[in-house]
Length: 319
Image 1: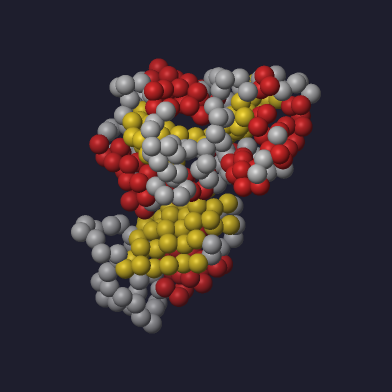
Image 2: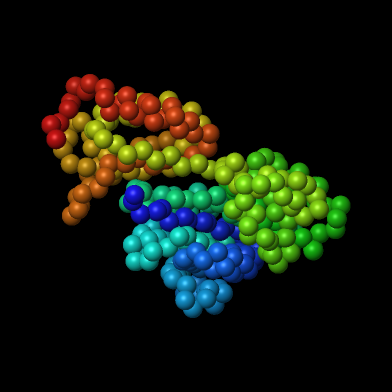
């Protein structure tokens, strides 16, 4: 058997929502379970403020003076790869800065070089419920980010519930359903949840409001698809296939051989536009494709990619 994959949990949420407090609870829980845990923390400033939450004996990497979604996405991928290689970890928690967009964080965690090393788990977003209710008074860009963080979450920690009156809870849930109908909602004060809920497969009572299925794997909103390639792809046929895919593809990436040329190419796909960049490397890479999107039909994609690899091509380079 190969080395077990390291689980990666991403914590997002706007500034001051309670991510660091939640991370503290999760670290304590993982330590009690006897699991080996690492932490990656991203902060916009030049000095780390929240890292004092992390116990001294916990492997820690910090990404300072930048946001994952802007300037240090590549650095996150590098540090994640470094932690996986250097430590024998069961899981890594990434606390993203409050300005980070969930898709950009997930994009950094699914680099082709990490295939076969990590398994990205459900995305957890912490929401300050009062902040959420007052979002209409915020700048348009901030309001949009808050809503995007809710839209792409698999689990929502509805934090600071003590700032709401009881009658506000139903309207809170209704407003969230406008953006995300499948998310698992956990009402909390001080981000104090029973962490076992995140890893359980049974039904439990969440707060006093509703009965929810707590197996979060059934609530995945953003999905990733990974496929190792055995044969070169015809570039034109592959591009036509990309246009035919159902669902919505936000990001695509990978290493591919093309039938028309020797060598390996770095494949990038964003906003509907594919790019193939000849990749000069000092070590071999396994050809592989990774996609991030919604409503991805994994079985269809696997089947059609096999067909593409087996299809005859006018231009087929002999490897």
